[in-house]
Length: 148
Image (cartoon, rainbow, N blue to C red; front, top):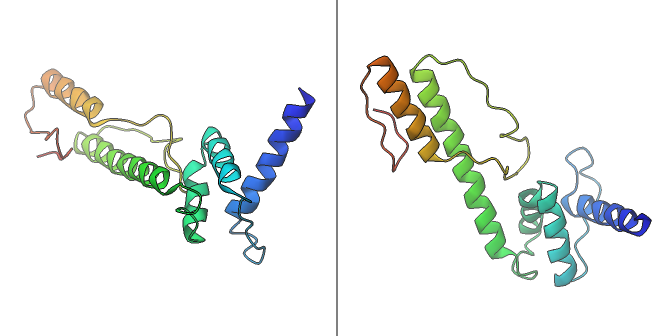
């Protein structure tokens, strides 16, 4: 067990040195030594919900292709962007019906891809139930997520 803790600590330090800190911009970011280490750090970063932040740092250093992570970056970025749009759509839907709500643990102050991604289908289901219960009509476009 102790060996695993040491390895985790070592990975944490390497990961943080790769990502860097906005509070210590003078500190030089450190790149992974090779593709194998870059992939191991990506897996570790993903387990710790900072996979996209790690990939962003490699992108900023123009090393995504070198480490074979360009495809992963594009996947993570797409998930992140979809999550942001979905959160916005949910807010629009709830606001249009005067519903009090809070979105938490979903929007981070750094590039992240939360596990608890909310899908348009859930929004549609909620919208349909709400309208039925309140005898209201409006149109919710399931493709775009827009409320009319």
